[in-house]
Length: 168
Image (cartoon, rainbow, N blue to C red):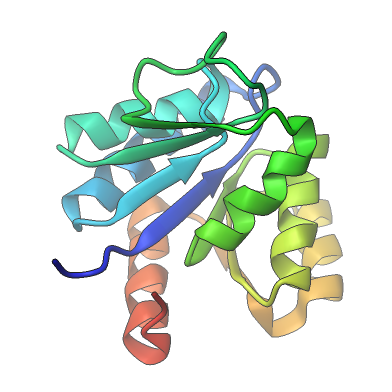
């Protein structure tokens, strides 16, 4: 069986905007249509749930890495639920298990995932972010941070990255 590329889609839960959720849904669907696996924080709201809903519409596989030791508030759209009991420390699992990270929206937990990704030498794509967020993460992440303004541009960036680095 061929190895699968895992795309981590990170973003806020309860603080996600309707626009964040719409973009996450579109990205989840596009990622799935390319045969890639989606990994999120697994919760039943926000970017996490929207991305996995989109992936299901694209007939994709989803992984939800949950903060609790049970599946309360987990997304019905998570095909595989990993119960960690680690709270926010599960963010490190999200980052290390993903080949590339796409960030939609921003909140404290999301910012921690970006910082962990940069510290772990992961490629981070900031999708539809404001200038302050872009400047901050580009300043600390330099070449590891890419900026995208659309789902199609993000997919092209992922393809380019995978063709060069063959990460698995």
